[in-house]
Image (cartoon, rainbow, N blue to C red):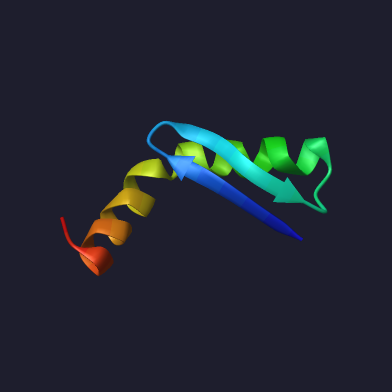
Length: 47
């Protein structure tokens, strides 16, 4: 199973193997944790 989501703005890029309900929950969790995810991304890759 795979899901790729953009963080700015939160949007599903592609997915495979997840149900619509699961994808909705994944997107919700990404939205709720967006600030933490972006902070970690920029700390690792720089900006």
